[in-house]
Image (cartoon, rainbow, N blue to C red; front, side):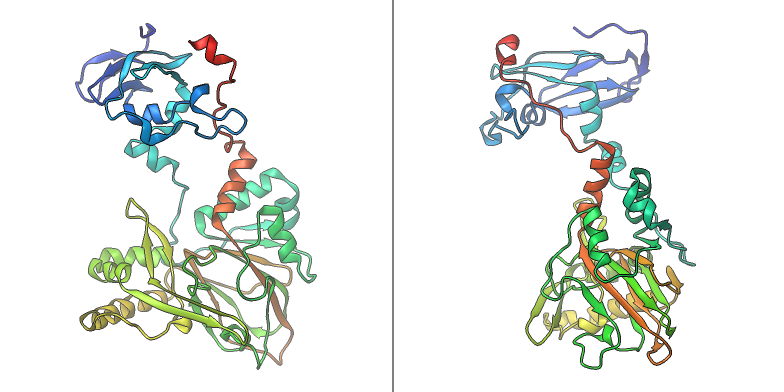
Length: 402
């Protein structure tokens, strides 16, 4: 039986005033009036996500219940809700399960709650941004400083850590305080400096147009750390462009162009004397809700397009439009990095580049490594204590619930 309360809400569907915690059982799902809002859950979803001891591996909280074994006709034999104990269900297959109020809030899969759980993203304005800056000691030595840094990269796609020791491979040590280095075909710690024999345009002193690294992988690295050991040369200012902001403009002004770049695969290649990487994918990848998930843009690494004849000109029209936005100066940050600066870029979103520099005017060397954005999000959850799931019931509790 539902617990009687003195809190009442207007049911969003019927318009009637009903007590908070009102539980309504339907044919294939139930609804629960919680926090003044109707929350709906399918029976099969609830049964699949049972935390009963019989359904979970106690030591790891992994699912023991084999999902395909759940009958299509699964339904509650009886159910009740109590704001302290949560939702209690005796299922038609004989299993009893409890779902806490906090758990129901956390995993509510209706539209607004799902959107709220997506990490916050702030697109840059047309004048760009000043990337958020954090002191090295704060990021590596304090929980609060590290969280602020992780949150900034998640929200804005870029951040700068200042005062990083200017010693070789310090970028690798920094990466390992946050997560894990992503290995690629080339050097684990990549040296970027003027090198007439280098295998990449980054080893030249000319302008580097904004780009994302290694689209020549089917899953390019999603975080890049660039650590300036020395930056005394004239010129060479860093440039960043919010690719997702550029794509938002393209999508609004020319949806057909946006759609073309979501569909037409582009081959990319980066190779050295001993290594080769090659992948062919559309420049834009969307998630299940139609939001941008991954953006590949590297004019210098693009290989000859190989698509049906009637798609070629449509692709180049769309590419020309997007390239003009990226090269316009909108959504761009331009700044001179100091010795010891460590630039972090969410490289599925933010493009990076540099202006030309004079290699004879002073030393310029940076080292970079790759990581994964998933590890940044995971590190934030760990620091906040949000990564541990609800504990499964202990095996001895089976008899107590029987």
